[in-house]
Image (cartoon, rainbow, N blue to C red):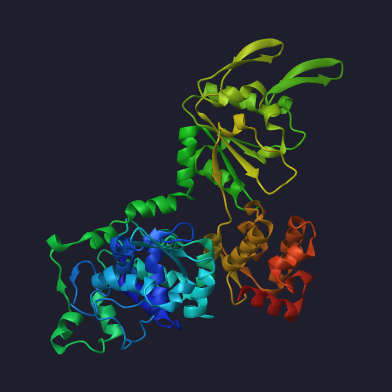
Length: 539
């Protein structure tokens, strides 16, 4: 299925409103991103000719892969669709990509010298983005404007064939993967707003002729070509080229992009590896994910949930002797009981969820049984004064969660680490775009992303990020799917939760707090002063 005509038209309407000073610069930038150019290594400009057509076609073409395009004006800059410019290139897209872009980038265009670093090597020209490329790109093209992220995602994926219907957020992830956008690029160049967009699907590609009619006739099109421009002939199958194939068959990339954070993927890893660790900063839904997987895939009576703490011991976990008055007896621990239960019911799956794994001395808690995490191994342990063979059955799975921000916690030794699959759980900004509304002129996702980018830049530690769960407060829940923060509640959230976290992370260093928040927000402001400061910070 494909995005339908109404959806593509709604994306066009949003993109055509954007005020861009140099649309050609921005247009070519995204084509370079689609080719893989970055800030790390200098790459040959020949990649533009070799790899540039698919991304250029996706964001520029006025003709679907099923249409025979016109000889001239077969594409348009997605950042200047409100009307045609007199200087709009009339040459075919393929020729423009293969020669014109290269000439603009390495030729006499002085603006590109601020965005790209260039080097000649063995009769080849190598380029990469400069350190300040985002700032220069914004200054030269966008200014104070930002691109509607979801509108651009719809527009760029309008020719893509999907196996199922995806949400705005999922389309955004696909778009981000195809164009290799960094977190910084996503934050600085885009705003995420979907309320004026439509998202519907059809069994056929959208009506590209309809979009061409909305855009209107190019200024210099020949009268003889006018009919072909508005009503293109259907392309013969044997004339499909590599562009058409790459545009229509992105499903492998799509699945690879979306499976990373899916619970289905986590459960698949758990099934094949028997135990895994969900790690990350606090408030990134690690425990929620573990509980959800348990609820979806295991019977309730077969799920055991415990929480480690500094006093948790081998005796609690495996077993040990306890004194009751004048009597001493052996008491089996939680894990030993669960292992025995799982062995008695080999056709059932059992799950142990261990929250805060690294709060205890993990090697001491597991003791000699750590080897048995490699299924098929057994050891002898002493149970009620007798040595007995101990092993862990394959129908017993373990999910552990680990808070990586708490500097008081221990680090897992290698023996434990190598026996667990590790899945990092970062803040989920996309979830906030879907689930959370704020009574301000910015989104919760953009606000949290900016805070976290500032934290990383200042403290050089991604583990000290703030998790998205801080915004998912049940007191702000309006219905089963949305959270709403009014100005007063958001002020309290910031002053009494977010600000104290930052003070703890920075150890009270005012210079670091101000580097993250600016000069005013660190002062626990109220009322109008807070509103002005927070909107200034976000915008």
